[in-house]
Image (tube, rainbow, N blue to C red; front, side, top):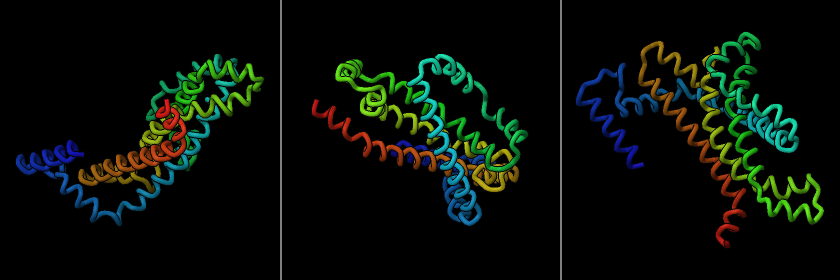
Length: 244
């Protein structure tokens, strides 16, 4: 926090001392003033982006979990589709987005697909790694006790994969906001991406920075929410480590 405050102070002083034009690089105070005074102009854009982000993030999370569990439980599927899963991330979203508009139009569907494509991969990879890192000693013990494959997954593999799951969720939460903004560039009527585009085209650099700070704030907020949920959900693991 101190480093951030120092950075903003240096930015403010440089903007004033060198008399940098506001359209080129506004001072933090000017950005903050625009953020407060312009609330009525961008608040509906903010709520639209939040709604789109949450919807895409939930669908992407569910899709990533299904993919990870299926590839983990069925080795044949993992051998067949894991390379395709990796290759799917080599396609730039900014290039794929116009194709989605051509295929699905300007509605919500192409925007949701963009966010899902951004979100599901970190979750799928993190969960798969977490499931593979289950203690082999405990696995062997449960098999000796006669546990079925489903029981091993529910009572051993899944609980021990939760920290990895939340690591993937944290990454996807920040990516989901970025994906929502990119998807709004496809032709949306509302959203932070639309607000940023309009501000950039009219050389309102202060509004562009307001949009940037809003995106950063949303990403941090989603990250903190998932972190709090993680602390509540995986508290039993921390207690086990402390006792050890």
